[in-house]
Length: 295
Image 1 (cartoon, helix red, strand yellow):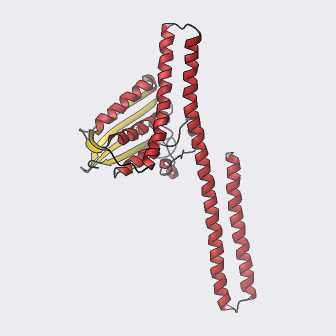
Image 2 (cartoon, rainbow, N blue to C red; image 1 turned 30 degrees about the vertical axis):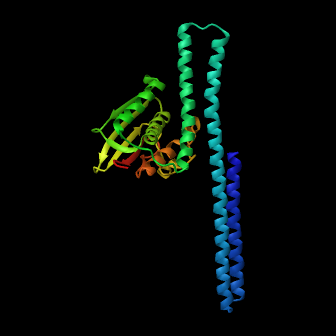
């Protein structure tokens, strides 16, 4: 399917280039034969500019629409997988417990796995629902909270859903950071940043989290991972809805392509911003989200 779309994009680009070339050749030939008719020459020039602009715009819109459809299809496939896989796993373990006796240690192991799959299912549903709420221009439910306490809460939750030997989370908080904003939105942004850092880590996850106050006006959260890194041209693209950076790891790690979109949307709704830093592939990445202390 991807190959077919690439062929479609190449076809429209080649068609546009061919039409523009033919138009230019015909116009140049006409000018050489009718070089004395100045008014017609001017009108022909205007017409040529309009035709070329129309062909170029048409090609751009077609290519953009093809890519958008590709992203939507990838999102639907990812969500389907993220919903179906945990349900299938939970059903399998329940059937095993129902059909035959299982020793207590194994039973507890089954319960732990099912709880993990349940958390994965809830996380996917929360992402989709949160994206819908962001798109509905919902007003912020403002309250006061401490950013460091919220980050610590998200870290505790991660440690219960991920085995400790497989990751190392280092948190260096600044002094207490009192913020005023939508606590649910900010919690979703923090959770998505931490989940992404663990999910895209190569080998045992090494994630360094830091909070700081910038210029006395902004609360900043920095999440640094030792993952595959990000190419310079992808640093802004990765925050788009449904977008997933190309690469071998992106095909192996399942996801909806909504996590970083939620992070940026939450930051913007609070009057802040979010961005990524990376020296390139193989160099790890640092994701930064910044909120005003008083939203």
